[in-house]
Image 1 (cartoon, rainbow, N blue to C red):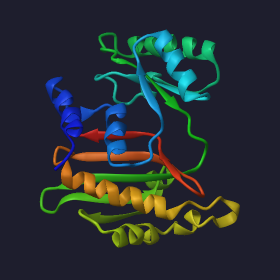
Image 2 (image 1 turned 60 degrees about the horizontal axis):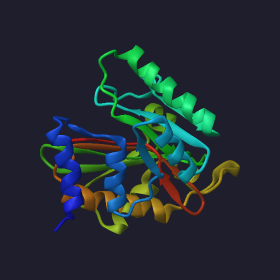
Image 3 (image 1 turned 120 degrees about the vertical axis):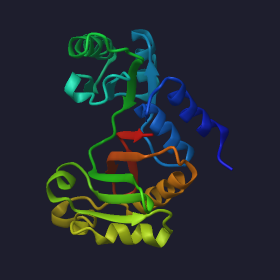
Image 4 (image 1 turned 120 degrees about the horizontal axis):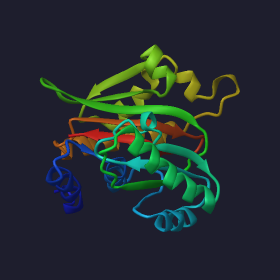
Length: 232
């Protein structure tokens, strides 16, 4: 029996006529399945953004929240590495100005104030729904690796913890996760845990048609889901 708070997330999107979850809604959903996400707050005013930033701690990432702007970077809707209150105030107003210039009639729900995760190895976990097999999970290195090398592994959900561990070992670039050429190693058990919990979530949430966690930043002892999208 899934939590009623999960039903509420999908209901809000449906009531607003959206076929996607906002990033903060997707992260809220992941957190309910005990997955590691960055701290976030959606601020409607400049003061609220400052308050959230002070609570979360600098440096901060600011992002536009708008149903009409899904590709935030294209609209100048993302500012990273904000270090102080003045930066938050300037960034808040700049993002709104950029969004209006990009799409004059864009409805702006707020500005996402997000903890800036330290640099790590970029990982992608994704899912699409196959008409025959149902939800299919994908794992790979994120960023340039997934775009150019298409170095990914797949499984049909539901998966076991063993399947999750095997998916990680199957990519060609697995040595990067082990810390090749002086790179820090990644904590594979955390990545396997994210895969396993994503599989459970997909089985319990048939509303999810596609999802992307890209990037997940992986560290020697942990990982953080930094960006996320869910299509319903």
